[in-house]
Amino acid sequence: MTSPEKIWTAALVVIGDEILSGRTQDKNIAQVASWLQVQGIRLAEVRVVPDIEARIVAAVNELRAANDYLFTTGGIGPTHDDITVDAVAAALGVPVVIHPEARALLENYYATKGGLNEGRLRMARVPEGSELIPNRMSGAPGIRRGNLFLMAGVPHITAGMLDALTGQLEGGAPLLTETIGCWVAESEIADLLRQVEIAHETCQIGSYPFFREGRVGANFVVRSTSAEDLRRCCDSLASGLVASGHTVTPGGI
Image (cartoon, rainbow, N blue to C red; front, top):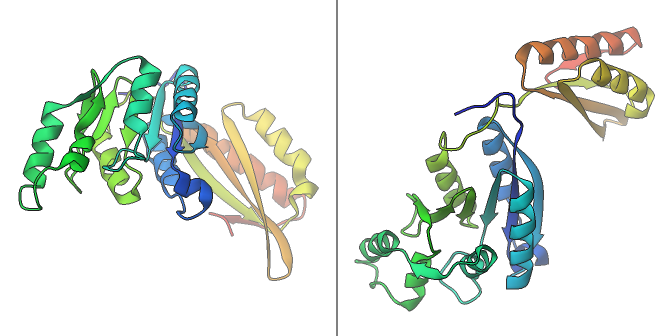
């Protein structure tokens, strides 16, 4: 479902001491952002918080109030420090309950793996009123409650949950991108970038400088929800760079 006139936004709360300590490198931010973009939803903010209930509650309440959707990754496993469900339930002001469908899924999954013990049953706990997000990778489902989505911290499991949600969220027109590369210091063409962006109100230009082969260059990523506006903006930027005596590389360097 799309609503092109509205810009839909989402926020992501990444939960876990292991991310903040550096023991685990987060991969979910990039894949959630990319998936949202295809759904026509902009990832507006990401917050990384520790395994502390009050911190999770504060992040959830603030970010869900400011965006159309809120996603969380991490902290929905079987151990004592997996407190995302409890924290989100506290933020929503609802109790935690055992979801009967989730319990049945886990019982079936663990039938030949030692059965459903207390720790594994924790993965059937949800904030009251929640639906489940299918998880083909393991027995534990993700959780959806309205526009709030609780997903696993393991990237390939998160990817499967996102796949299950594809096409289920209302969003706007997908954000399109094109890249132009140029061997030039971005400071030299800052005015050109500003003028081109002002002249194309539906487009944004991101500048990403680099230093390679002893030379300074930059890739300019142009974004728009309109293919025609995107093309015009890219043409204008490329023409301006060429007029300034530079060679452009479509697709980036």
